[in-house]
Image 1: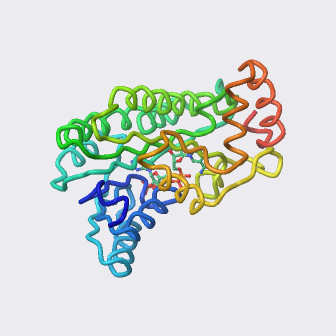
Image 2: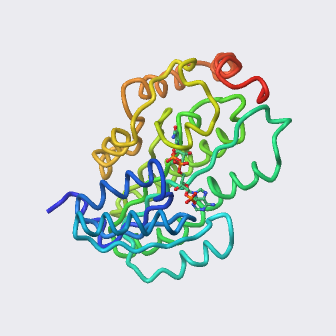
Length: 264
Ligand SMILES: NC(=O)c1ccc[n+]([C@@H]2O[C@H](COP(=O)([O-])OP(=O)(O)OC[C@H]3O[C@@H](n4cnc5c(N)ncnc54)[C@H](OP(=O)(O)O)[C@@H]3O)[C@@H](O)[C@H]2O)c1
């Protein structure tokens, strides 16, 4: 029996059309879990569903939904499947000088990174607690652990995810439901590519989604936090032992070199 079988029969994976969510879906299917794949791009999800069903002989359902819209959250609430594992990997990032940023884009990011996290967990958690078994995987970021100038609102949204998860973890002790937060550093996905950051000027190694998800799944049900890889673990340790003003100033200098000038 796979150690993930207790999270069955279905895992709901959001952000399954790309990056870390897509990789989470692949690795869960390989371990025999049935899936509901959620993102906005139906064609990408259908294609992945066909591949995973064929390769791993699991049931895969697709739910094309926009989690920043009430209709998208409504569609999730109407799901019939018994979801034993929620993996909420859908996320947005907006960067650049905050005072120049577009308020609508920033608000949309908060709706996805913060409000939909609250809504999905609030919907699925009571059923998991009722049956005494389940798991929730949320995606924070290294940015959630420390000031990240030029990603200020993104960093704030990821700090919410981290503290929300850590608080619920203690509240759920003894319930049989596992709360797990992943705090990746730079990871080779369309999101990291789309930031415009020159990662060669940032003192951290870019990881593969495969390695990040493998470490998260290995920790699921054991450790609360996955800061994948040695460099990200060091960064989390430093964030706990260094005044946040110093880290803020240092990260500002790094981003002033790594972001294109028109974003500063
Ligand atoms: N990559 C990194 O370097 C990195 C580092 C730290 C933390 N993270 C976090 O890890 C998580 C996954 O990131 P990623 O790198 O895999 O990003 P990604 O490749 O850009 O994937 C984001 C996913 O979110 C979905 N999505 C976006 N807007 C949505 C909406 N309104 N409703 C529903 N789904 C939506 C996208 O699908 P559609 O476009 O099809 O909707 C896509 O599947 C995010 O929370 C991110 O903040 C990433």
